[in-house]
Length: 221
Image (cartoon, rainbow, N blue to C red; front, side, top):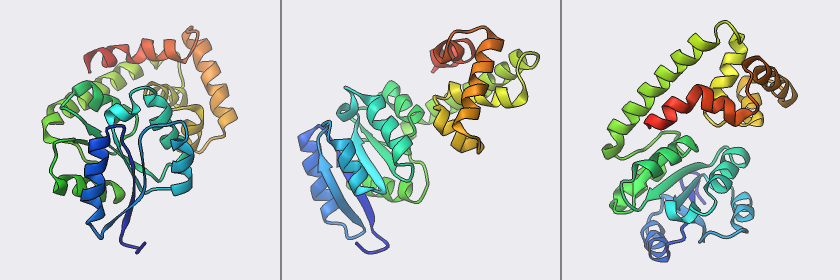
């Protein structure tokens, strides 16, 4: 593979979509398809072996175990950018992909040029989403800012600045390992911080913490 090619792994349960993508991408010298399959328990091992720059998957393909696939990519293949193909402009699926770290989201009816542009863009570190979700993104970002202000106001007297930072990352679904990497802390230190946060706030677990500080945002989006 030449240095300017983008290697792509196709994970699509929809056979017709999978075959169409193979035909489209196989004709482009700038893209190299390094793996193709429907969803199976072995797919995670294949992804590790291929180390693709871009994972292109359909939303139905991860429906049975969405967190297993996207969470696995986020934790074990941090250099792999994910593009999800939605079968229709479904806001719930789009927001799920966004929260799970997908770098791009395109509709299955998108023309070949749009698919290729999305692959190249996410490989270059950009984010790509359909124009039809612009209003959703604005609402989502606005509510996040409101939620952050709400969190800071409620926790000013009970949590330290570092603890507030951890609560925000927990509310965005970050694991202890991901938080440790992001804040340059040991995983053990993060775990101790989380225990102190739970004790100070009087909640039983991380889920209850999220319900307390982010429940309003999740209901709105």
